[in-house]
Length: 499
Ligand code: ARG
Image (cartoon, rainbow, N blue to C red; front, side):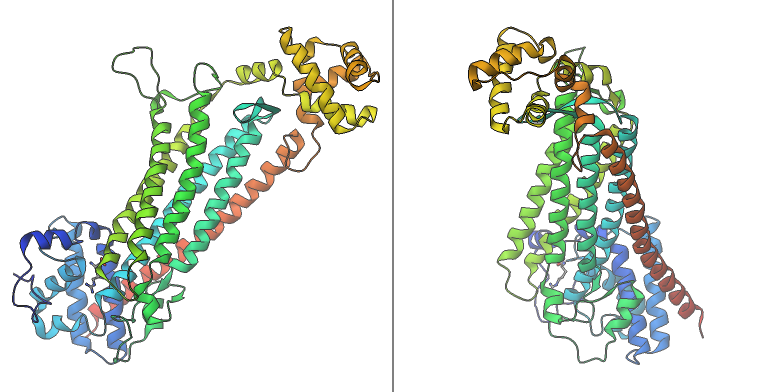
């Protein structure tokens, strides 16, 4: 057995239960390839610095390639008898090359900088694919907004009718929200994509390691300079989990809106059958289970963030094994967030928008009351509070009579104003109709960012341009990593082929 490669100081092998308890090998499936790439880059640098010989480097690189291929072919399983992927891999190399040559692979390195390296490498690629999924959702929201540029709907506050607006306005709002999530992740990425390698256990190494070279070989933007920081810190991962939690909270609110709006009472939206679930007993049911799960998974990501923060808060500076426990919640929240994004993208893409129903509700609504009040201020010189009072009373009487504002005429306004303001407010029939007609409300809006159809078109255009720009930035990040991977592969191949 190779399981004892680090244990010369200890008399006994790890007790079986303890081994299972402290091994991170299952969670380390995620960083298997990163560990190989990191080890290859480290050894290339060791050779370039004159620390190991070329023939040893070649053997080490070949052994690592062999292990990679066996694993990819399903012929090698990570074994729970090892503490982690780092011990597992080194043990495999030692088995193949022996201690004389294989034993050089870990020169000037500790599992502390090694694991931080692997997690940063995996995290950056997961953040990139999450970002790409995020942009796909934003694009679907924009497409849906385009198809609903003039779809009238009630906008809600306190889940009560607030103002009349457009469904496209709502969709673009979430486009903006999600682009902020994208930028938050992008900002976090800058702090993730730094190499901790070369920090060794905590204080650095007496070997003349070239930290910048390994950082370059692995596609990092720079290094985490201070070696204590490099091995101790997990704020890069907590920050990523924080950005993911925020993103999920945002998705959860969309999901909640869609759940409400697809109820029989609202009937604004209908999910495509492919995203709905039936009931085992009620044959008529079409349940929005995927949306409900997005909300529940948002809860999960709050848990994973809390888990990571709580794990790290009591860890004394330096590496302690507690830090191992930040990996599982990190992978979990990223996995769930990416699935949630993909599912929601499909839901939006296939969403049936019941424009007629949205419009009917808007037309029946009293939500143009604020339009009437603002109109009275502009047309009659009433103060806003007076206009508010007057319209409030008008609505009250209208509701009591089971009518809508559009059923009234300016005479009712004149009568009521005399009664409560002591002066008769008279406006033309034409103006009154304009001010209470929900259909005309959006066009009367004149502020930046409002539901005015012209504003919607402008915002859509600028959001589309922003999406293109952000996609370009993401592509650059991806290209840089891809190029580094290619370069590393080529460098490895060149060494393997060299005499
Ligand atoms: N399995 C460990 C982790 O995931 C790797 C680092 C172990 N370092 C150590 N000094 N025991 O964090």
